[in-house]
Image (cartoon, rainbow, N blue to C red; front, side):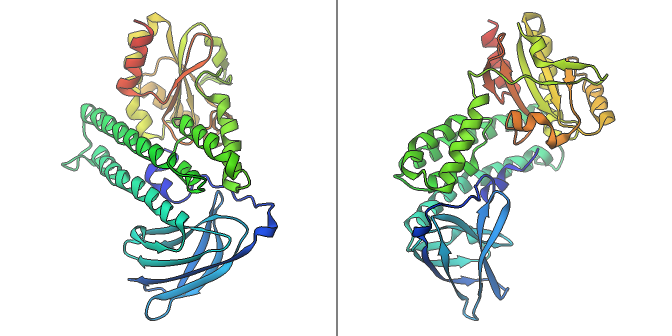
Length: 370
């Protein structure tokens, strides 16, 4: 669990590289009014991959009014952050934006004077609609309706509900994004996508918008990202993994050629990974005599904890780790952003599916071995 899924709303994948089109630098102006805000200063920040970059600050007057003026070299995603959320806008090279904000519910802001900002708000509302349901499922998964951790059957049902909700969110976002015309807002949508499961969506955004918006820093970042993700896309040969097993012997993924292999990225400290262990044991025992194997790659850093989890969960297949946690070489190699994460490869080592778990994994294997 590298990050909680609902935190994707604010900052994930935007590039901080600048534009070469210096001639386009013009002024922007933001005016607005805010209520239920007790601070005297409001900060306008750019969203970047390295965090928030301060653009300007404004004094909030007694009546709640505020204003910003400044310059940007191109359309830029920015935020006004509050304890209970954030207001996200698109600053243009020459824009006059008016905002109406309630600090107790800043995601439901009013905005005018910026078509891109108005479009961005619509995209955020689509995401928020589904994430409210997801947060409820997360609570139900960890605490249950009676405050106790639910059993395996209920947890599996919650996973199915989660997958269904995320599929609906993806479909609605796709319809929204591909109805846009030359809008940088399309690149903001990539914040809500996981590269290991949504490569097809990312690639389609790149194909539709890059040719018209190639000078945008966001277009450049996504184009480069898609090129990298293509190396581990479905249909590509899985990069070889060569690491020590728990006994110090070097083992390679390629040594399992001739079998269907599930590459399982996990860690002993990852609760969802450990909860998935029972499903992996089930499919391993069910299909191991059909030419199926599992190659588990741990993002642990503690050897004893790693070995104990293998023994406790009775994971009787190949295990490797360089014990570097998120600094492991496989993280960048397979573009891993969260675990558990799986990659299913065929007998020739080509990737046939990603992030299959539980019943979905069993169904896929049943199809392959029927």
